[in-house]
Length: 267
Ligand SMILES: Nc1ncnc2c1ncn2[C@@H]1O[C@H](COP(=O)(O)OP(=O)(O)OP(=O)(O)O)[C@@H](O)[C@H]1O
Image (cartoon, rainbow, N blue to C red):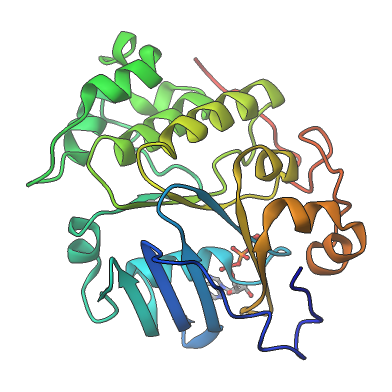
């Protein structure tokens, strides 16, 4: 097991995945003129979910945005061995990096169908069969304005947009945030199937979801990666989980350290 206090160890900050799809080294991110991420290393293995964990505000979202080029960045971001760090976001996406942002970001005034059509990437096969198999409700609600969907349904639209195209890796940021427990399980089920299509780098606060889905875990503290290892080992170690994440390892979906805004919203 690799473990460390945040500032003392460089060995534990070194991932060791053989032939990762996504290989990030020494990544820094700059937001609003400030360096909010520094020296992040992580690997995403070819068929897996890798959880990106850490307390609130440690830089998980900024790390994902830096991988995509949505914020200023430096370091190495290799996809299948090719460094993308100098590419603009649209070219990173075109190489096969799918993104499911925190807070879903659907086009509220457009229909579900138009939200999906807008996500169609040139040069990619468009996998409507997969999407409608995973989310039959989206086909039924194709003519409905996305803004009138519940939070859970909007999350499905957001996931569907990423799954529609052929991606080498999916970056999924807090997909269960604010969802009722039943919907958390539904999203978890969908992510398990999605991971069979493309590996996932998953930011997730709900440790039961992490336990169910993730093979590997990377933990950030103060914008640095300080721990890499099997997710199950991390979650089995109460002292380590408490120290790195500030929560007990047995935290379940009902008691996860999440914002208290569980909602299903309008349908
Ligand atoms: N637009 C911004 N302007 C100023 N500071 C920002 C901005 N976005 C993020 N930050 C700061 O960058 C740091 C990292 O934020 P980030 O959202 O990446 O963390 P996080 O680990 O994803 O947090 P959370 O778990 O709360 O979603 C925080 O200190 C945050 O306040």
